[in-house]
Amino acid sequence: MRVGILNSGGDCPGLNAVIHGVVGAADKLGWEVVGFREGFEGVLAPGDYSILSPEDTFGILKLGGTILGSTNKGNFSIKGKSSDAAKIPTEVLDGARKTLDELDIGALIVVGGDGSLTIAQYLFEQGFPIIGVPKTIDNDLAATAMTFGFDSAVSCVVDAMDRLHTTAQSHRRVMVVETMGRHAGWIALWGGIAGGANVILLPEIDFSLKNVADCILQREKDGKRSTLVVVAEGAKLADGELVVKADSSGGEVRLGGIGEIVASELEQLTGQETRACTLGHLQRGGAPTSLDRILGARFGVKAVELAKNKDFGKMVSYQSYSVASVPITEAIHKLRRVEPDSEIVQTARSIGICLGDSPT
Image (tube, rainbow, N blue to C red; front, top):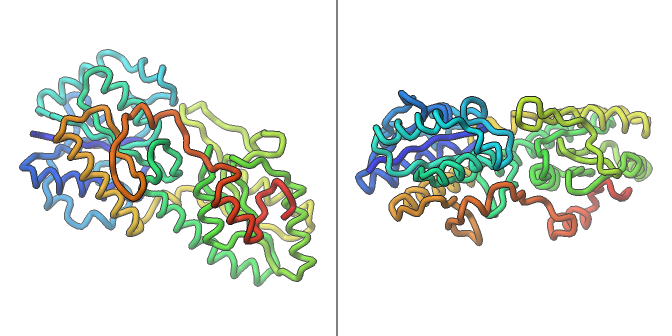
């Protein structure tokens, strides 16, 4: 049997670990693995692919990015709605089917986020032997408790904050750190708590700039030399409005710039020198953490097991410390967001972190 694998959407630490897991598990079964390059585009006739052996994946666990490349553009790109997947031209589907048939692919493993898995589900409905592997640094996919790449992104935030603490203390500054997180604030929340933030602003908890300013001024009265603010790119004001306007002209919603805006407003409200730092794609790059390497490899091995059982239309899922599977339909368009009254949010409040909905 031959198994195909592709990476679709944004890059993410741990993608190579998934490839490593798939190739290793398939080799044990005597199967070949076909790696398609540049996401779904690699499946189009005449096909852009290579046969992956264990020797080809030796040493890739520690590498960031993906040896297969990835894209969120091209013939299979959609705007994120299920109905948009149905707009994929028939000739594109026929071309992909022809490539898979000619290569004798018995299962196609799609590693991607919400949009990519939406395409994967549509292909499954069209008769393609699809298996999904969830991938997002935002950790916001439903039906899985954790996705690989998230821990690496959080580590990036923590490293940045460790560095910013020292310069903020030296100059009595307010530092605003902007993280990724359009709809869910997991990176900002985990990174903020672990990095010693004083203020964390999330998409799930509307905030007031006045409340944040009051918190900063109170810290000044208490003799604190600096304040660190972590803000997710999709954080909203108390009236529910985004701080920055979303740009969806390219299909995927793009945000960015909230850090600079919040820093400017806070400087005016507090009179304290304020600087902003946008981490951006630093959160996607670099070597994956040990946790993401292990989780990615486990996901890859489980995907091969699903292929062996011909359990198509399923997505690998991490729940209760075990890797299992769920229908892809349970994961797409169902975001797992931070619950405002959850235990981890209460932890943040209990250690004195301001979430912007009140001064302290």
